View (cartoon, rainbow, N blue to C red):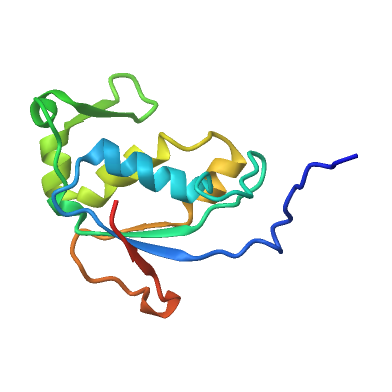
Length: 143
């Protein structure tokens, strides 16, 4: 009788990847990064365990969006007070804080709850090409 192999977190080997976001489409790159963070690229993937790797994204300020999203897409947040709805267009957010745009795109593709929050902590996003994670020896991958 065969038994299903379920990995333990201690047995899993975690690696770090470096991704350059220059001239890449926002949604397509975010989807591929979410797959790596979740661990779906590994044969030992298990949906209830954090099997994913860490990802460092550089050049987030040079990411592309297609269509009319720069003017039409709005990021909304609510303060909790009456009339407290804040809306910021994508063009403003990309010019001021491009890291937040990419982080939100990836975060919304991950599972909700404690596992998703734990997976999301392994994402590092920087607007330029400098990052302080050289000691992790990240592998450069082209997505």
